[in-house]
Length: 247
Image (cartoon, rainbow, N blue to C red; front, side):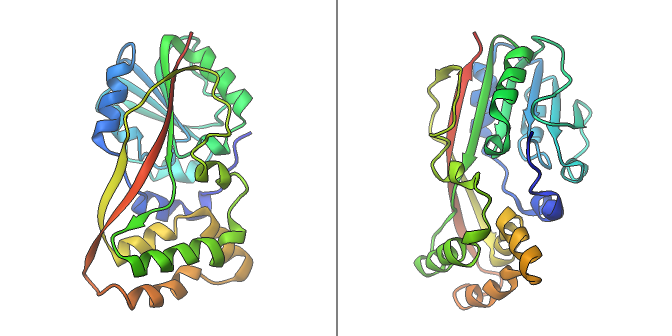
């Protein structure tokens, strides 16, 4: 069964999680057998769903967090459904592509992969991707953020986080693999947006529940010594991608 770590931070997630590059979705649409139906599994508040909806006729976006889905934008060709990754409710062999953005590590993989094999059309595509630590174009800030990640909230990351850190290399992927181009997320953010993004981390929510205060508020003072109000910096997240095709 998939685990819900993000309902407590659903508002922050919807407001501050970065969207993915258009080139990624253009590539996915180009390798799908058709562009009729996409299933975005672990959709959260729609960070990938919106881009899929502009390239596929219909999109089903599922997540176990109703609060996350409630924050996603309403679109005419998108159905949002609160359900687990192992029980989409889709008909057999009805889907051209299954996407999983920054969520595969939370799933019961045998159950999800069985459901994926069931719903994909012949030669249908599954694509699971994610991103690890952000890189900021400022060495001092990078040190502050790395220390926050490793030391302040390090003990509060769920154990599944290790799979993100190693790019899903230890997760099974029982599909005929497709080589993917290199993709990266790039944003230009103020420090206020960065703080909002940090508050969307599951470890921050767990820290706050355990300790009764927001660790990002403490971090904000240290960041402020490097980052003037209104100033922007380039942020980058290299993406890792696992793509494959159904038999």
